[in-house]
Structure formats: C-alpha cells, structure tokens
Length: 200
Image 1 (tube, rainbow, N blue to C red):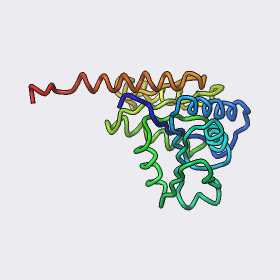
Image 2: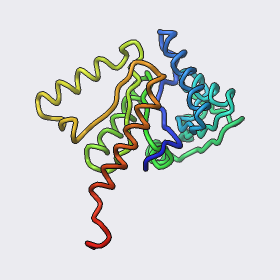
Image 3: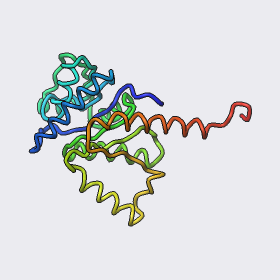
Image 4: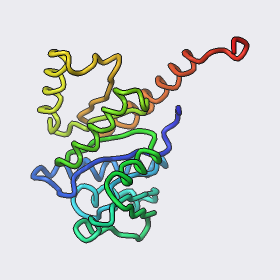
C-alpha cells in the first residue's frame, strides 16, 4: 500500500465550541475532493461529520458513510450523493471503516472519535497494520492526549516512536502530504524487508 485512495476521518457528531473546527472540516473536505480521495467516515449528517461530508460532495468528491443501525435516528445519515453502509453494530462499523481506508485522520471529536483513533493505534502497536494515523491538532485540541502519550512513553507503557508512530499537524493543508509520505515510507520498508524471490 503506497497510494492514498481513501481516508477514514474520525470526527465529532457535534460542531464543538470553536468555529475553526468546522472550518477545518470544510477545508479538508475540499482537499479530499480536489485530490479525488474518497472519504470514509461515520455516516452522520450533523456536526463536524456533516460539514466534512457535505463539503466533499459539494465539490464533486466521493463519500462512503458507515453507521450502525442504532445510531441512524440520532446522527441522521443522508443517502444523497454518497454510499451509505448500515452495519449491525459498532464492531462491524469499525472493521468496515478499517478495510476500506488507506489511512486514518482524527479531527476534533469526543469519546467516540478518541476510541476509534486509539483503537487504530493499538492495532498498529500490535503489528496488525501499517496504515498512517494522523491527529489534526486544530488550535491545540489534541494537546492533552499527546501529552498523555508522551507521559506513557516516559513511563515505558507505550512503545517508542520507531514501533508506534503517528503523525500530528496543526494545518489541514499538511494532512495529505504527511499521509502520502508516511504511506510511501511504509511501502518502502515492506519492500526492504521482503525476502528476494531467489532466496525463497
């Protein structure tokens, strides 16, 4: 996997208190559409999720929303202009999002956003994938979590960066270049570690 064709974006079903969060979601939606990268997201039409997905669609991009059946009333998924997948539960939802994405981006969000991105970090730590993970640290939103991870590393409960790496940026314009660079690096590492055919 060396090319980014689809990105899973985790973000809030609320807009938050900082208008820059909504702006970041919309700006990133424009970037995804302009680069023909499919958005994989939680399927809702409200909050940052709605701002992000609506913007991608408005600018001619492709969207896949993935939502568990029990959340359809609360987050009001829209079918217009997007592929919508309704799953039986959260576990199926997260697995489907993982399977369809080439990387993961966390915009500001709540407990659900936190749980989803941390799960991807856990899977990466356990060697289950090498897809890039990025925190869009808009106005320092993720600073407390990043400080906690640093503290956990200092206490040797979290592996060093060479074993568990993730990306951070404050600007949405930097998200895609960072993800592409990380994806190319992971592909190069896999090629380097591969056993030559004449030695099999």
